Image (cartoon, rainbow, N blue to C red):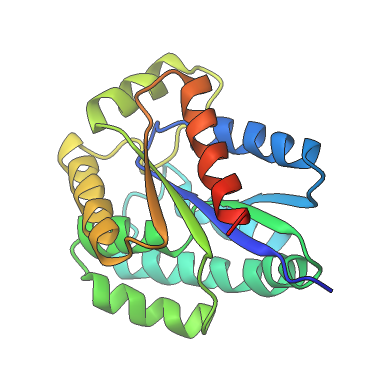
Length: 210
């Protein structure tokens, strides 16, 4: 059986990941691929329960290391229960966020340190890394404005952080882009949604063609 692919979609708040991910998955299905769409934290029951704790707006006293550990715990369960089995069955798994989010948000923006957060996550993921990562780049100002306009979107604890936090998140992602240039591909997420979708699809198709 042909091994599948693990593709992740990353970006700051308001980058439009979830919308594009859904449409991208549909286009790949139309092309004849077996596609599994999922998200972090979440994707399966246990991880969704952890998600509720992490993103609950009332949990303002949560320690940054507790936050990092909870993300890693949710990630582990999601991997072993959903992602790894699907990839082994030959599916293209497209996941909204993965380890790069932890490195940018908790490692860099929270100030724990990227190496420290990577070490926590290496225990959780072992040697599982994405084959390809689409990074949706957008300024915090535009991203947060989008969230305010999108009344149906879930507003979580991270959305309520100060602008300086979101600037650090984007800075963290840009550090990762330099560290993993072969895996991470940048897409201008300030474009109209159909342009972002086309750029994403073109990158994935090119990757699939080798």
